[in-house]
Length: 263
Ligand code: BTN
Image (cartoon, rainbow, N blue to C red):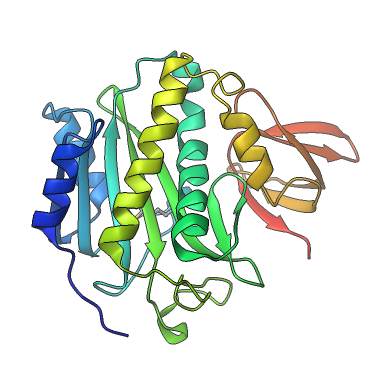
């Protein structure tokens, strides 16, 4: 499958016409778009700044993992947000990005997509991961980073339980079109969420997330950051975006962790 570079001029034109995005810069190589944007945030970068890289040499994932993809085969994008809503509600931002990514895939690629809590995007018959999201606090704002496997072949995937849009049968694999679609959907959700001061119910975000969350109702094992492991049934998402798990010892609300769906 042909792998064209992103058309930076087209993206800049698109950005000028968008309401929310301040700038889009396409970098050939960078260690991590999240790390660079965090540095720029500290130097006063505007809210709505977007960085995209054709290649990351040290792409980072959640829970200190790495994120790897061959050049031109995926999207590695970070955006700087400075939400004017109570900080207690910022935990919904990565979930918002997950909803927008799912919608982009369903709307543009014509393949079903679902979320594994908190924001792994799963596609295809086996519901393998094709996208991950890393949100980090930076200089009083949030850097929201999204990695999306677009045309990776099976032998290029980092793990057996991952996939790409092309492998899942996507009808659209043009990365520029996917990036515009993704930024458009993030902007729409962000506008709703901000207009309701980050209220997950009033903005419709909680319902949109719950609708797409494959984790709910399943038996799960969750590895917590302190090394503890819990098992139980994933029953709900609470007002802070935490996963509620009904364990033998009672309910536990998980703010961060690695969830395994027991298939
Ligand atoms: C995960 O699934 O663990 C999250 C992966 C997030 C990867 C993206 S790629 C763009 C941005 N820059 C990074 O270094 N990480 C995020």
